[in-house]
Image (cartoon, rainbow, N blue to C red; front, side, top):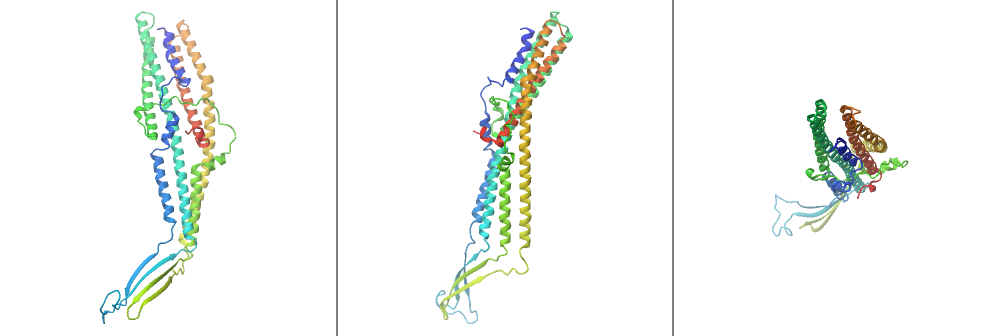
Length: 420
């Protein structure tokens, strides 16, 4: 094998990666990773919270239960209660009654309204949890794909450097190369081996990160070649404010404002006292066996107008409104940041693909050709190879950064473009 072949072997392998691995083996696709992330443990926890919030609606939407009561009174311990059946002849005033509280001021409706708004917030929390897991899974997917491709390329580079170092040693024994140059090639081979070890660690860590989000075995993690098909900046225009208002976290904060408003109105409704009405049927032998009692009870709220409950509800409404304003502001800034990041990443990836990487290949090939003709020393050849290797890996990192930035922008603005 010639020096040119040894030099071009890793370069061609890296070029295949820069061409977005058309022949990569099948593996986990981005759609599969996103589908798994949508139903992971964090989303399940949010769904349990939603179920609890919906149960709160059932608890709130009912009137106070009637109270059944019974009593035995006027039991004469001094003169006795007489003989006969305890229920019909003995002189005991027996009664059975029922009491029911009439809630005034629309307390039940307001209580239910607050609970339903809380359930709406919990539903939006589920959607936001899914969005967060999708964003994390997309980033982890492309981190693993980049680590996977980077590991493949560093292994090819290491193999090429080992072969070049072996050839250099054979040339030293043949008297065709200085021992110092052979030592330099061996140093480069050892450095390539160290780079491979670092790439293996990065791949393992990326696999674990994706496995945590998708509940898959990190030992068997492998991504399919699912790079974006083209590099484009985000389309200009679009109503960022409308997109921000449509986000689940903003809708959850808005629902909590509605819940706090209903809670405030419910606290104010406490000033309208509830009335408890009831009736009893009495039986007292010797006097009458058909006595009826009608009663009504109302609490006397003298000197207190529920200022504490109302004050707390007002403070919680102000807190919810402030949280909504903050969430809406952060959402808008986040969208602006995502758009800028996607545009910048697109320009960087285009720069590597269309200019930097081709020039690095051309310089390396020229250096290799010059070295074979004895026009440059080995040091210059190794420098050219190091530059190409670094440029190839940087181009791969730029492609991964673009894939993440563009994917996160789409998930926040056009999720249907990525979700299955």
